[in-house]
Length: 294
Image 1 (tube, rainbow, N blue to C red):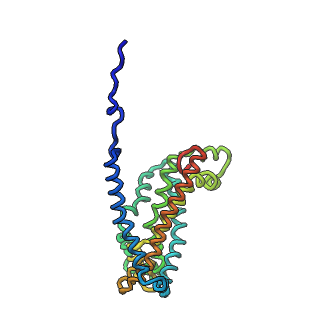
Image 2 (cartoon, one colour):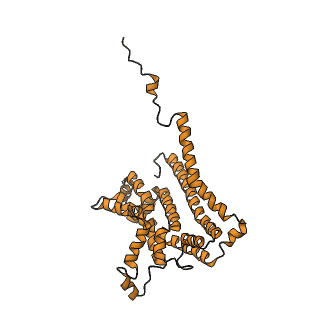
Image 3 (cartoon, rainbow, N blue to C red):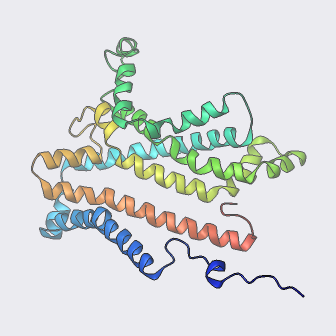
C-alpha cells in the first residue's frame, strides 16, 4: 500500500516574518527606541521644564488673568463643539450605514474632507466667507454680527477640524452590524427615535464614547485654524494653544510649559479613556459572544 510522501517539518511550520528571536528583539527594540525619542522624551521635557522652578512657580503660572481666560474659553468651546459634532457624527453614520442613496459616496468623502485639508487653509477659507472682506462680510457688518476674530469664529473652525472624529468611529461599526435589529424593532412598532436610543446607540456606545474623547482632545488642542480666525487677541480670543505660543514668545518659558502640561494631561486622559473603553468593550463582547462594539 502506497503511502503519501511526508512533508518536511520545516516546510509545514513556515516561519513568519518577525517570528525569529533576533528579529523580534530588533523590531521591539526599534519601536521602543523610536517611541522614546518621538513621544516619551518630549512629554517628559514638558513636565520637567514646567516644574524646573518648583511647584510654587508652576502654580503661579496659572495666576495670569489672560491664562485663566484662555482656559475658560477652551473649555467653553469644547462644551459647545463636542456635543454638536457628536450629534453630527451620529446622524452622518446613521445615513451612510443604514441607507443606500445617490450621493452616498460623496457624503462619505465630505465627512472625511477635514482630514485632508490643512487647518490653516480651513481658517483662511472661513475668512473669505465670514471676514470683513469676505462673501458675507458686508451683510454681517450691516447687521452688527461679528464672527471672525470672536468666539463664534473659533467655534466654527473647531467644528470643521473635528467633524469627522465621531462619524469615523461609528460608520464602520454600524455597517458591520447591519440593519437587522432596527428592522426587527420596526416590525414591533417602534418609532425612529425609539429605535435610535434603545437599539442603535447602545450597540455603538463604546465607539461613540471614544470618538467623543478624540473630538474633545482635538478641540482643546487645535491651533492652526483657530490662530487664523481668532485674531490672537490677548484675554479675549486666545485658547490654550494660542496662549502657550504667546507666553513662549514673551520669553516666559516656565509659564508656557506649565500651561502646556494641561493639554498634555488631556491627551494622556484620552489615551487612558481609550484603554478603558476598549477593555469594557472586550468584556462585553466576551459576555455576549458577539463582535467588538456590538
